Picture 1 (cartoon, helix red, strand yellow):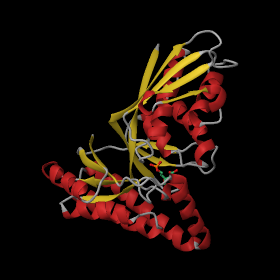
Picture 2 (picture 1 turned 180 degrees about the vertical axis):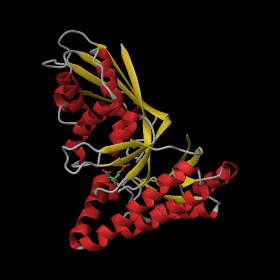
Picture 3 (picture 1 turned 90 degrees about the vertical axis):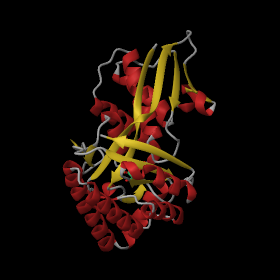
Length: 314
Ligand code: PMV
C-alpha cells in the first residue's frame, strides 16, 4: 500500500487579476491536508475509489471524465502503462470542500503522489502540478493554475500564469520575514469559482479599459505585498490586503456576507482583511496579531461565520 498527502491552500492576494496575467501569492496550509492511499486490488475489479468522509464511492468506468478519474489515467500513461489495472484507492480530506481552501487540488496532488509511489515513478512538484492542472481543466475551463501549483510545491509562491495554456507559469518562492497569523472565515455561502470568474470576464469584455486598470492596480498591490512579506512588516501588509479587497469589490466579486465578516474582523482589531479565492461567497482571511486572535475569531463567529480556521504561515 502506498500513501501520500498534500496541503490545503490560501490565496493571499492577486486572485482574479492572476487570470489576466498579473502575479498572485498563494500559501500552503500544512495543517489541513488531503491524503490518498493506493493498493492493488483483486483481478478484474478495475479501479475503485472510496471517499469515506463524504460516503462516496466511484469506479473508473463511470468516473473517467471527472478530474480525479482522469488523473488516474494520466498518471498510468505517465508510468508507461496501457491501463491503470486493478486498484483500490481511498481519499480522505480535512479540507472543507468547495471552500476556496483547495480541497480539489490537494486531493489531486495526493492522488498523483500515491499513484506515482505505487508504480515506482519518480515525480517532481512541477510534474505533479502539471498533471493536476491538466485534469482540472476539464472541469473548470481555464483556471490560472495557482491552486495546483501551491499544493504541489507546498511553499509560499509567487505565481504568474504562462501566456498560453500550454506555456509554463512563472513560479518563485516567496520569503516570509515574520510568521503570519491568519484567520480564515467561511461565509457558508457556496459560490463556484467558474461563476465569479465568468462574471468578471463578461464585465471585462464590456469595459476592457476599466477592468485592465483594476487588474494593473491589483498587480501593483501584489508586488508590494511580496516586499512587505519579506520585510516582515505586518502593519503595512495589513493595509495592502485591505487595498486589495477594495479593488476586488470594484471587480464585483465581493458579497454582503464577505463584507460583513471583513468589517467585523477589522473592527475587532485585525491588521487587514480580504476575501480569498473566487469570492461571491466562500472565504475571507484576516491578518491578526497573536494577542488579538481570539478576539477577532469571536467577532467573526458573531458576525455569522459558518467556520473559522486559524493558520500560522512561516
Ligand atoms: O476559488 P479558488 O480558491 O480556487 O481561487 C480562484 C482564484 C481565481 O484567481 C479567481 C481563479 C484562478 O483560476 O486563478
